[in-house]
Image (cartoon, rainbow, N blue to C red):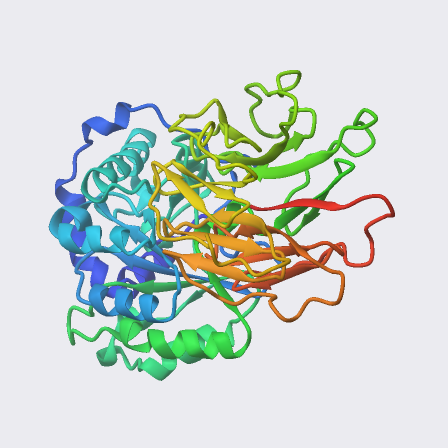
Length: 501
């Protein structure tokens, strides 16, 4: 929408904690060198609009916090999010990270998602194209320099002031504008007649799948109240009571999972489908593992003959025709660089378009096989799980394993890395074992006779995970559930993998 002068004046009153810094900064702001920097392309399919909700039927909410004039509520907000294991998105200005570097770094260190809110909080409909581009890219450069976190691709227009042309220029700089479904009005403070109950009621009153909530990190400049920070525990409790979970703005890029069957079929649940190997595999060849590409949102299928097929993801090679006698492909993992790793049963890790940090080849005891591979989204390294319950780490933190703890009849059937830098190990009885990351539950003791847990995938959006079962079922833990293949797996086929998007 194009904003009228009247609406613009209304917004000047609305922004509360951000007004002073925005008005003064706009008067002295001049373009910064980062404006000439090459921009990454905006993620496909997200251009052309200012997103005000996550398009999903899942019961999820994205909490977002704008940070500009001050950081008075940051410590409280981070403490509450940590207590309830919730991840949110913080939209930071360049001036905020300049003036409050410790708080900005604390937000990133807490594992919260960071977005771009311009350098100096100006009205974007008053800027030239060059100024718009510079406000976006210079802020991104400042945020990365101070926090080490990359805000790409999420951007929020200051004051919610935009028109279609401004959206186009921001898209051209590689960013996606994100607005909000509901403004808590916490920025008005107690002097504006708002209470913590008002904040809670506004969020709950607008509740819908994919709701984006606008809150603020700062205090009101007149009464110094931090209503959004103060109301946050009650907001989270109220939404959890209605069986909602929390996501970051990364949910706009995908929110769901894919299940792979041994005939090469890929079945999508809440995530885009880009194709599969169903009906195309040669006789005797099976699909054995599935990995999501965290860069494109596509995926790779690993095959029993060593081949790899790519769907909306780059292809860099495979082991087809190179497997030694007695070896098998047991895992594949996509990395944050856009490449992938393939695991063989002898412990070998084979890299394609990504960095190699080592493997277990030649180091496994007799009778022990490498059975699973997971990339670390934090370090870019990876973990290899073994049939004896052991886990080996390569450029990734090691926090423990099940070595020597597997009960008779149990086997390790999956491993997944999480955004916190830890990992989860799945056993065939449905048990999920957490190492350096949060545990949300498992299927242990709930599987019917003859049914096994066969795959594990971390949800990069909520921090939860999914467990796939041999009967086609999927169990969701602090992650949205969209459906499964329960009762639909044809005779002769098996569930071979699951991947979260």
